[in-house]
Image 1 (cartoon, rainbow, N blue to C red):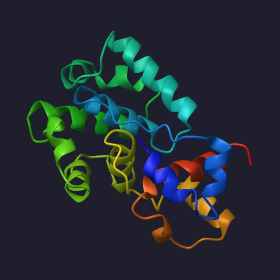
Image 2 (image 1 turned 135 degrees about the vertical axis):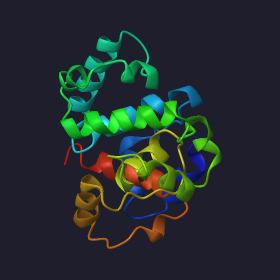
Image 3 (image 1 turned 180 degrees about the vertical axis):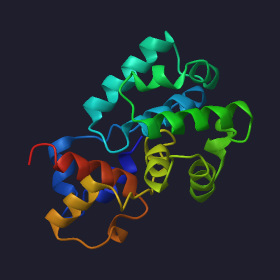
Length: 188
């Protein structure tokens, strides 16, 4: 899916070597029915390692005994969500997300039809979802091609390591460039 981006970025002196080392970018868009699950995962993953977030999300799915849906989340008492390993702020965020979806204040299935800025505006209206979470959703759920999470700790660390100030050189494929920047930190 990202061949054009990889071809463009392979000419870049910073990203080109990372493409050779790490191979093809594996970001794939999620289908519409998974947008809610994707957002729950993004909320859970805030400020956590991927492994820890996966464990907590796995506990939540086990507690629900199935797919994460707004009704399933709302049926659980806050304490049961908390017992999965989530901070209270994440419990409140997932509950607010669930309530907005149930009340149709957030039309989850329409997010894929909105512009990047419209998606961000819709998502940051949810308590506990800020720009970073909205950007992760744009990247990993919608697979939008030109998202650069400038406030992400890993991205900042990689940019500092490369002695770069901005990401404009990688437009219109900053999502893929970001993926390679994250990979560059995995093993030094």
